[in-house]
Image (tube, rainbow, N blue to C red; front, side, top):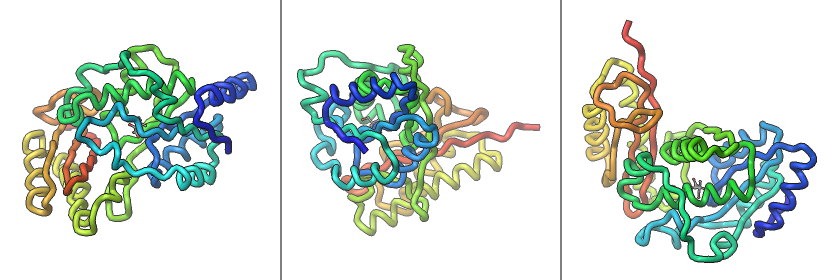
Length: 285
Ligand code: PAF
């Protein structure tokens, strides 16, 4: 596996691969890789394309009081994992390489970035869309892979690519969970054993909500209230949001008639976890 922190090196290598007719598949990450990332990489590998993985903890998407400095990092361990996964090149730029000057140009994906995680993390999705755009321009991939755990991020990137006519196929990959249901996340390492146990209420309450919708529950508000009640009763988690939204464009939903996204963010101590489920609705006969 090749490895570089230089944009110019990466560009030269990719130009050569493109000249040889190879397609480029890309998996952008912030590192501290877990099985969820490795699933994205496996999916990208299945395409047979030249496979680029980036590791960059992007300061632009962290708010002033968020966990940028504390975000877990272990580039040597990550490099071994991606090499074993059959990645062709690992790109791990420094902050100076990505942002040599103060940024004055940003990408904003309006509407989609204002609710859910965007409401309490102002500027977060602007930072994500901007860095992903930069990475797309650097890597020039044919396909890019995004996990559905960050469902809102996935929709924002898909919309950015459509609105800006970027010739890149955005490939979603389902959430990967631990055996007990906890959605995999680099932030899970911050949970103490008690919080780790309590956090199971997230996936359990999403499963219960799915069952109740499939049994005929149509009220989005009632589904939200039921989940909030479970979380409050069964854990000390502090709810940031629990929302039922249209799965295709995140617009508000009152009556559940089309596929919905049930999304939540809950803080356990100082660790904020997100999880979600897309629920298909049985048609009335
Ligand atoms: O999902 C992530 O890890 C990040 O938001 C991404 C897409 C790599 C951009 O920094």
